[in-house]
Length: 177
Image 1 (tube, rainbow, N blue to C red):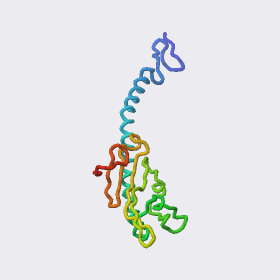
Image 2 (image 1 turned 90 degrees about the vertical axis):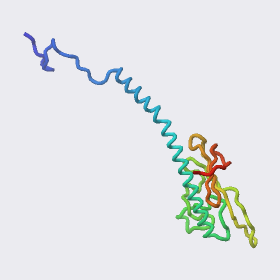
Image 3 (image 1 turned 60 degrees about the vertical axis):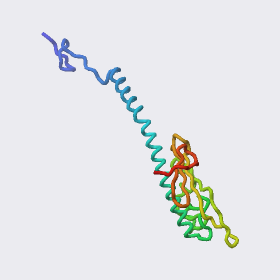
Image 4 (image 1 turned 90 degrees about the horizontal axis):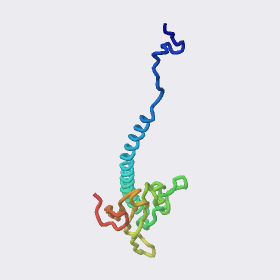
């Protein structure tokens, strides 16, 4: 006569060993699969970040160009501005002025935005009746770290043409497509 185990309800002779959880081999296989997937995904996400930074740089250049056009319309005696900070400004600080026009976000006016560094250079001044008027400019956007935050440098002239430097500098010779 076989006795029944009062805890499990099975007989002692037929009791099968029940495993709780995963074996070491199963865990190692799952970890290997996750590692392989991560090795495939990480480089593509870095490329996505670079592409998003480059797109943001082009859109920021267009915003700066629009702000320069508005600035020239609002302050005709000054023409364009040669300081990126003049296009920014805090709305809480008071009404817009020639040194704080409040036309672009302060994050862009600081010059460091979305992995790129923006500057206004090559300003052409014309003297009229004892005051200087800026008649042209060039805006450059270079990656903070070439290859990491972006691969290309961008330049925009006062006519709105965006050119690129494939090496990430300011020697822009190719038109942006």
